[in-house]
Length: 260
Image 1 (cartoon, one colour):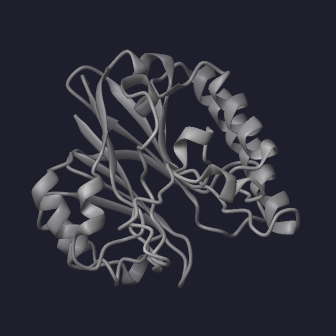
Image 2 (cartoon, helix red, strand yellow):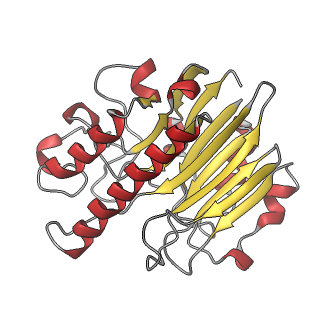
Image 3 (cartoon, rainbow, N blue to C red):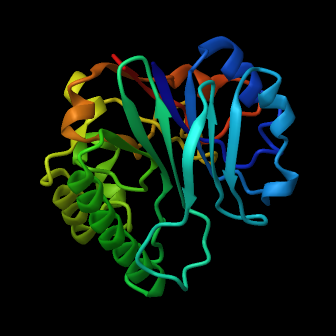
């Protein structure tokens, strides 16, 4: 089963590019971020006619996450537990049943956190603490799961073309990376690094300053797999070339292939 994560940076802006990528890549499941649309305005029919079931957790003009799945989605829930006052649409969960067993899908759009320090960075770290708690709860349930999306975390210096430029950024500050490592220390597997080592692999290039043409990118879109899910991992790749297509997002898809 091919499962992808893709920050599309606005469904209206990607109304042609996203279906074109789906037709080419043929993923079974896609976790979308930054749909920037309320649920009732999301163009579900474009994806339903391609055989996808659609679930969204939207928000006007900002944030928003969604799941597209060629298999039925069960037990869909929205919103990261731990703060009933949080109104930002950044988390969606659902269960999909494969040929062998069920898998819990968690799609996320982790807060950027800039400027840091400050209230937005405090929100980022608090959100990551809630993410940690949710991962612990899912591990206790013993169902295989994955947590995928735009983490807004640069894990290591090799994940940025110019790491010194990010030293004081919320994506690379020591507290951010410590929270990331705390997640991994639960026993989760970072799918891309389980398959590919070394620098030069990125999933985001800014629209400005010729970042794409100079390959001045960062890797911030990740899959974290529970131990049972990691046992299913066959491959994980970044669809880098999508960034060079017409009207691209500043992110590109990342996908895993699971023996599921």
